[in-house]
Image 1 (tube, rainbow, N blue to C red):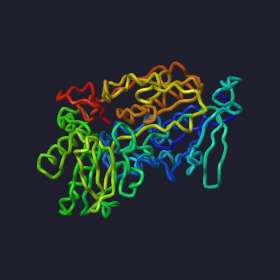
Image 2: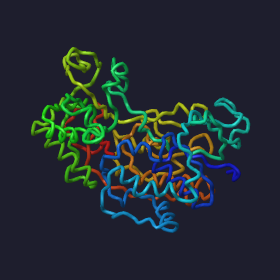
Image 3: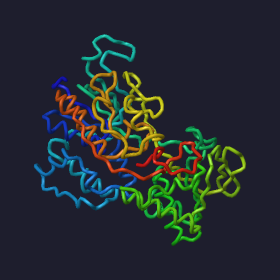
Image 4: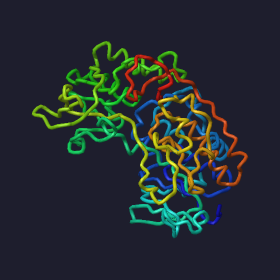
Length: 430
């Protein structure tokens, strides 16, 4: 790998910063391109949310070593489970402020394409040795950057799945976007006014949906006019409660128990088998219609928490191996398919499994998992370590992948199944 050009990392979230720390520890120069105005921009959007795992699972070992050797940073209590904003303030901001890194992070740099200098997708030529060319939109206009290698750690948070059934937008979803919020809104604080006293529908069966349902139920206790419905495509409500006390990730198990109580106490109207076809204007608000035509609901606001998907548009001129089911790195796909794996059953993997036909290009972090919801930060940190070892010529270390994850007892994703079984073989858990 050429030493006169940087390794460009797309995305300055936890995994991108981990990759940068690994490069620094090996004497190489990273350059991080972050689309947001601050590092960890996506996490800041859900900063009000508590993570599932404690600090012991959330800190990259290489970043920790750099912080402890170069700064006065103190490791948070290992068993405490932080909020998203605490993860940023108490850890990620400190990594970004390292002397070797702080001037290597370019904010408001949105990458629009990655290619090889002088080579489009079809051209062989001297492709394997040609520098990468990254084109990014910045406050000062469009810029071009050459790189020795590229690590895409841009994540998937900014490309949410639609609310419509079958993975496509519902009719009217775009037209009524002003009443639809994707992700996990801060309904108890920053966005309280939008939902207080309103009829709100939450769509989705994962933990993002559950967390939002619970927050809205809490809002309704102080604002009784707030009405809450929760729509899931699956027909087996038992899958929503997860592993409960059997879940080795305690915070995640507690979430399932709490939402079970909220539904059974009548605080939340649970609509199972509700796959959305259309969103339409109604004299009293917004009408949401399911695919059967029999299920109809009039609400004021909709929160769509149906997960996210990778955006590969900027990578169209690269030769990639993408799994056709999960849209993950091709070799990785069968290992992480949520129809067959939970977080804890994903095998250790690194540079070998993450490699693409395009030499010296890797996708790591949540984006490497495509649409699979089984990603944990610890997985991403090990990916970053292995990939950087490979790029810097330490093939032995790159192939020595050690990863121990908590087993789950969780079944929180319904991929079209209607069985009443609670087998973990089909769980998607993170």
